[in-house]
Length: 411
Image (cartoon, rainbow, N blue to C red; front, side, top):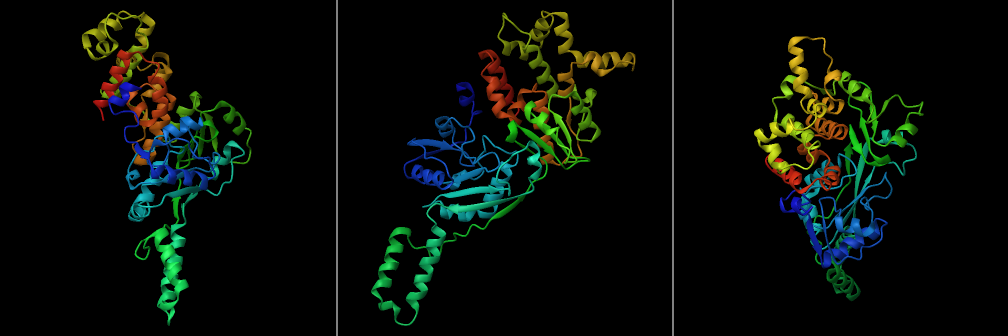
């Protein structure tokens, strides 16, 4: 991953944590029901997740109390606007944006000497069946201060009010209480420490619960799409919920998404795009073995591309060029069917979210399309970084160079 790190494409915006902040982070872990980290320094993202602690605990989702109860940790105002690198839900980033939008100034004040624990309460204690994901509705975002600084403020203000009454200013016991509070917490009189709970309304989303589920509920009929075959087989036994259930690999899924005006394709338009060129190059790369030239040069040089396209076997060549071959055949006769010429995965990759969808909906559908047909390295990186990183490690150095350059030239 060193090449990605040097290119600024691998968790480049993590915030370093050390010293007193480690102690506060551990206090949050304990308050949320987790074991402390033994690390003396580490880094965190916008939601408080740390790759080093995840490695230590051998659990990428160590901030979850079960699949239904995610949490977050805020120990620095620098977390505002930072990426959420391993989101459990597709809306995690949006929730953190809302947190800082509403409470940004208070967070700046509080994290001077305190840390904030967040629990995302969707009124679901635990998941028992795959279709429990349909219970998502409104998520209540609750805030908890590690040292109950807000309560200490109320107590300090009450002591001050008592001090002002009658002749209490001569009460030495009251003096002692005020001094003790001031020494432990400082002067809290003018600090805004009230973090009232927020409500976040969910619509369509993706969750890692049950090993990956898409819930599309803004459309004609709710559609639930499972990445895990075992969870899918369990879900289709359900006779209570009025939803369409698919496994992500089912060919019928794409047809249903088109019927529901969720995705669309225009091959003539698509072949003119940079995206199509990236996909075509990636497909060719899968057939290149023991090449004379670096893969990076082959994919970027039009002459070398044609040369190696003609070096692979005829069937492989037809797969790489199948979209263009189909369009050429269509000019001669409209009797040709797409599925007879274009490979299924390539045809799937030619789809886009329907233009009528909102930007948030489009992002979710792009993620789904990338998971169905991961052939565009740029969109793969944008919409499913975790899977992209796994695949990246399998490529040779020259292919990695091409991928990095492709991503950097388009972001």
